Amino acid sequence: MSHIRVRIAAVAVLLAPLAACSSGTGAGGRAPEADAGTRAAEDRPATVTVSPKGKGVRAGEPVKVTATGGTITSVTVTDADGRTLAGKVAAGGTSWVSERRAVPGTSYTVTALTTTKAGTNSTTSSAFTTAEADKVNKVDWRPGANSVVGIAQPVSLVFDHPVTDKAAVERQLKLTTSNGTEGAWAWLEDYSGRDRIDWRPKEYWKPGTKVTLDAELNGTDSGDGGWFVRDYSTTFTVGTAQVVEVDLDRKQLTLERDGRAVRTIPVSGGTPGGDKRSWRGTAVLMAKEGTINMNSETVGLGDAYDKMVDKSMRLTWSGMYAHAAPWNDKWFGRANMSSGCIGMSDANAAWFYDQVRPGDPFEIKGKDTKGVVAPGNGFGAWNVPWADWQAKSALR
Image 1 (spheres, rainbow, N blue to C red):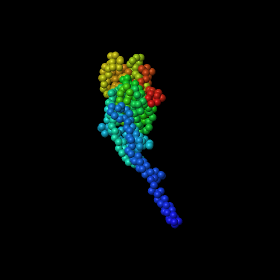
Image 2: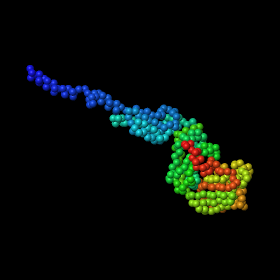
Image 3: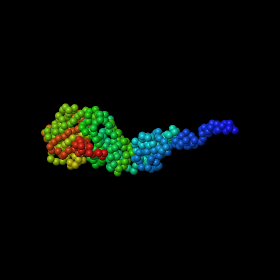
Image 4: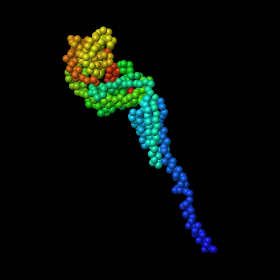
């Protein structure tokens, strides 16, 4: 009997480990069902949320995508014409935001690719449509694309309708230069009474500078003026350094190129003592308009003149030009007897017209003038001290 009890005990000892190994617990003491449940949860598709959503939603907001229970691999936002809104996945991979805003009156499809913790990919699609713009704002800008301009040329944008959210608009204006030129945006009232924003460098441009403006305004709400529904861009190059020095006291004009005088021309400026006086300060050549009709009634000077004028070079919106004025021939270099413009002989005007380009500064001085050219009267930005100019930005 004792031998039988020993054998039974030994069998019990040998079977004990086998019983432990075949029990219903897994690694770490978890049941197999628990492991299977964890794996299933980790492999469950992520929950994706897209904003905005629906129809007739307000434009002007970025598209946002968030993922719960997984990470975002990529997001594509495409409109009906195949254009896309680029964006970036945030750190951690659970959210994505578009870099540009949804624009008015547009249908978008959002496709998000997500990855579970177990490594399984899944795709989620969503769609939304923005409401039409109830009012559209547009822009007129200078200088024109691919132009060569003088060293005083500002970048100027004039808006069709009032801009009440100036900061929102200014944030969308990206100006780059080939040499890191220092400059600033400033909000002005254009001579027409419309809202306007100009960018000028701190000092005159360096010749050869290449400038690019990207006005990424599409989808931006200007406030009371309505929505922008397109982007605008322009590129230009700064040409030779030319400055026109106009001395109304001495009745002469000197063209300087690269700091050296090229030619001095006798002129006749605005008649002293009244409304026919010229402006002083820095005016910028806006355009070379050739032969045009000049009617003094359009600038509030009664019936002083109405004639065709050759070699006309516009300096202000208020009607100040440099031009040929053969009828004033006896006064060139002797007296200021014009109706506010800077007149010269036909021969000198023909030569001078061929030398200058839009963007060249006219630095005008004289004791008896109407005052300094205002910032919005043509390109009078250079008459504003630099600190005051910077203060006109909506982002300061």
